[in-house]
Length: 299
Image (cartoon, rainbow, N blue to C red):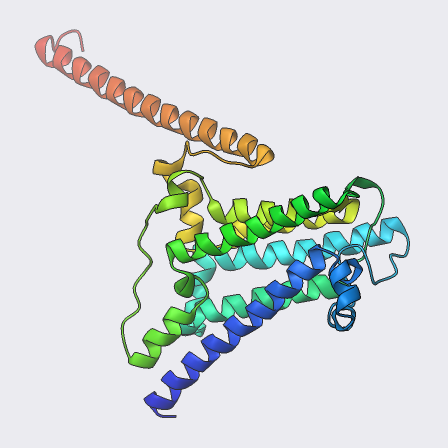
């Protein structure tokens, strides 16, 4: 296989993986919003054929216990895939098998496939209902929150390099025969205000729905798992010391952020104590040596 053919194939593969992500992402929005039960589906009946199942509709739940177990298993698969493939150790091994210019695109493809599996096999748990928007204004507000989440999510990806995040840039560089470089750490716009704009966008998407059921509450775990699975530059924004005290709009994540800060503070204090203890030990040893030299008889 010639170099030109390989480079072209790598570029086309990155485009195909990105296209798969777009399709799965769009279906995820319809899946979370129960699109087949909205007035939009009444106006366009083809939507029900395109979106046969959703988080609350379209599949027999079976027993509640079985539904919870199946859904937890799906979430576990999703979380493991994101967490394991984001680890530096796994990446070092993975890139020995997969070319670096294809690593990100392949990650996007596998993540999209796992998310598609989750939506395909998801068991609705429609009760209990935490809230349900009946009034037109409340429904519009819920959809607006979800739309805002999509806007924040996409904007955040473009701020840090959307094309690198989803593998397109690597494919383009491979096509041109260039050299891949690691992403630089930057904090533009939203990243100066919020610890993790990508996470905030996901939370708005998952929570901005007209009807919040037990099943929907369970599937929102994807938001946290997705955070752990965003490798490279985007994930560094969570733990970078410059952003340790940034505002986080998620209440439960604010608690975790507090733990992060407390642990970091405790770690720094322990390191300081260890240095002071080491210095004190060295001082005591030097003092003893000087005394022995000054008074050999006492030694």
